[in-house]
Amino acid sequence: MEREDNYLENLDAGTLKDAILVLETVESTSGRKAKETIIQESKTNPVLQEFFLRSLGTDVYHVRFKEDIPSSDKNYGPVESYTRFLAALKALSERRVTGNEAKDKVSAFLSKCHPRLRKWYLRVLDHDLRLGMGRSSIEKIFGTGFWSGTKEGEFHYHDCCKAKDYAKVYPGEKQIEFPVAVEFKLDGERSLNYLFPDVPEVQIYTRGKLRKSEIERVQPLLAQYLELCGKINELRGAPVNAPLFLDGEFLATVWNDTSSVVSKTENFDEAEFLSTTRVVLFDWAPVEDYINKKFELPWKQRKQLLMRAAGAVRRYDKVMQATDNIYVLGHRIVHNMEELMEFHQWSLDGNFEGTMIKVLDAPHVFNRNHKYVLKLKPEKSVTGIITGAVAGTKQHAAAPERYVSKIRQAMTADYYSDVEDDGYSLHATTDDPEAAADHLRTLVKDDRDRRITTHLDGKVSYRYSERLGAFVVDLDGEKIHVGGGFKYKAGQDERMDYWQRREELVGVPIDIKLQDDKVSVAKARFNRFMRLRWDLVESQHTDSDVEEGE
Image 1 (spheres, rainbow, N blue to C red):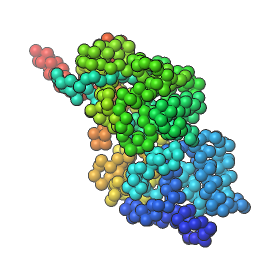
Image 2 (image 1 turned 90 degrees about the vertical axis):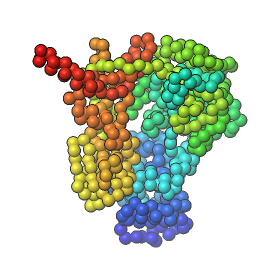
Image 3 (image 1 turned 45 degrees about the horizontal axis):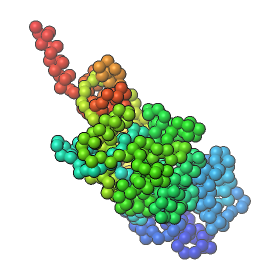
Image 4 (image 1 turned 45 degrees about the vertical axis):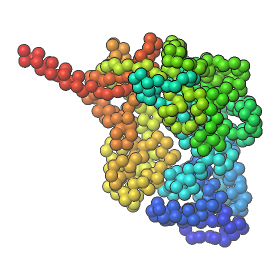
């Protein structure tokens, strides 16, 4: 493209003009390192930063254009165009304008923008600058904190506190140091809630980094979050509008309805959600401490403050209601193993999954930690027989055809070679698999389903097929689905391997880990795959051979 430098002369140096020139230069440059060098030299440009934040960040705009947008007779100046564009993005992300109205208004706006700017605006709306660079490349330049706290309400979810198995940390007769706090182990969907009262908005993520945009737009829930947020901030002596992280779990009225209610996207029903679903909170932290990956305030003080904000006047060991849909999980302090096991049995009798153990003076850390948070679940091993298999959903389902087409088209470009389709994945040979993977991720919303891998030497791969969701298993005459416990790391993908071999696996014995209690739903609700028992298959064959010989 011929540069029209005079078109952007009205702007101050280091803003829109330079940002557009950098993007155009990166687009025409080959090689990841060369692209990174160009951006590195202009990393302080605020407009360039804005383009990357808007295209690779967490905002959702819900407007896309497949057709070209012709220019109108009137053109906005560059500064006015850019200012209006940022305002349009804010309106779209906050859902203040939606559907056909949104598309018509954005189309009319874009028609008045210079083609050079319109090109990049459209790519931001698509969440794809098409530069062959994903989040990982940008983080190398700007740092992992680039997504965090750069603007009000904008940050990047990185991780959350996760528990270790008590039996693995304290095997045999070894015991944790008492006293400790114990809570019911909930069996719902993790709800990681980030509140920005000044916007105001809430950003909600799952443990798997999926953003719950539909739930975020439920205004009665947002109002409840803001009410509780204000009380927590007041109690801790912080500004009432200080951003907060609230850690909890979604629970529907019926336990196995939770996933279907909170996972809906196209058919999400706000009324159904509000009438059937609770958010049960068990911890919190200021967002700035979350960004820094550690909140030093001890657990016992965090929990006491959370319960006071919910209206508790004394310690409560069950679940207490704070607002219409927000609850706070109670706890009990135990001083020895006998008291711990007494609470644990109470938890199991109450149809909970087990017990969470919290160290009283522990800080809030945002990773899996063996020292501060533990989980106690009674388990035993049983053997059943595989009778069938069902395909997976979400990240284990087949990829959308539009994504497959984009990847296939990209893999046939000049810088790939030897594209292979094995019926389940596309594989392309390339000189720089990591750079190729970054490029492909820009085509499929940053590959949230983790289908793009570089586990094959000298290749980049894209899994487009479904893989195993669950085995159907006969256990003592009862049919159950076993869908957890499988490894599906690239190169060690049991879900894909077993799905491809699903017909031959019918009739094979399987070891399952079950929760060992008296709850009638334990078999279907708390089970995990352990191993296939080929040794039992061989012994069955040997026994039949002997009988035939006799």
